[in-house]
Length: 305
Figure: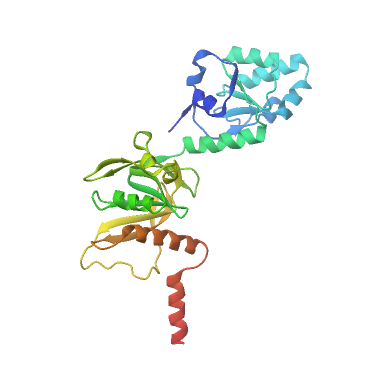
């Protein structure tokens, strides 16, 4: 299970500490779910996720303002007693004295943002979905070609990095070389990035380490990209039957998500960069509803009739 420190969230979203201890920044956030405590402030505590960040907006603050000081103190005391990680007040609103008292009593930080409630919530959920997503690392190369995230896999020395370098020269972008960190950010989406210590670097045998960002410019690199297609490079094996029509769809399972994949045989004289470009364009074409192999097959059936 992955976690995010509260101090990291504060830096990312410029959250102002209203009431918090010095050690509160080390609180671990373990879920991307957040909660607006409308029912909880009214006294209903069933099925309340105490591991979620709590967000209070104008509606909740207006409701609390309608209560008497004694009732407000009781409701807030019952609420803070549950022990959630932190409370964020949106729209730069001032907390009630009873809220500050409960925060100090139960050591639960109160933070504040100037952002409106819905916008802050959506941004926070999106950020936590990425940071807390299940992830694996794979030996390969990730490039963006014509807007498609292409994960290139294969044995060491088969030509993955050289292919990526040629693609960069042809105007495409590098995300990761050698090691790709892959996160499952939704039931259908995989997001790939490079480890920070090797980001934007390529290893070329005989040359060494190449810094793509400094050599080719900022337009040649990208921080992260969705993985839309897997291309497996393998040395050409005599006698092996390779797909020549593309009528069958093949997939690679990554973190429980089936990603369309191709096997590209490597032999002298084959321009792998151009092949990867065509594979990316053909994949986009298939997503738009046109499959050249099926069109050819239907044409032959038509002529047979």
